[in-house]
Length: 212
Image (cartoon, rainbow, N blue to C red; front, side, top):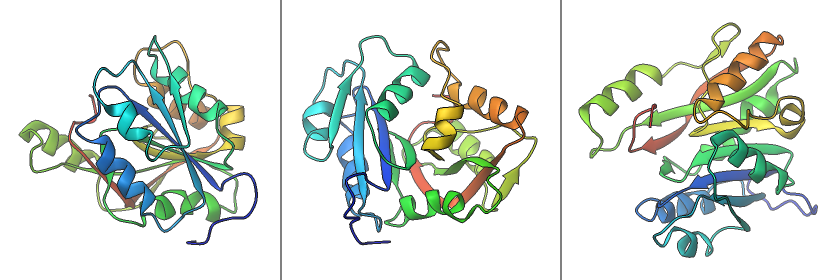
């Protein structure tokens, strides 16, 4: 999957929410540019960054959207509305893909899904050496080394996730909640008979814990 698609619409739209991510954003974007899947677009949704996040991101991104009032689900929905890819990947601006197959492995379960039941995929998150002991513990416990299909467990995490545009059209993210928009989305799709897939093979480094 390393050839650029000649169609006008990219295979994957990558949505990245940022707010003062100058410390991490270039590492994140440089790693994304190095992915095996080149047929992607990068949409930045920035929440009034006061550092050089936007300036740095402009070197890599295809589009930058500014939001004044940040609501996590609304920010993602705004980014997706501005995108055109068949698959949607979501990654936090302070997360760094571990290797150049991150994107490939993140959308692979969606591409290979013959049942039409996988609503979304989320990948592993690993701590950095500078992460706190508590964050290291949380990330290690929550994001294990085994793949799993969640038929009842609604846990989902938008620091490192993917879904299809068709699924998002059916289930957009909640635009009023101030947090856990990903868990609410997970509950909604599970309630409607869909599954969530976890893959440890699409891993990112995440300085913060899962509740940041």
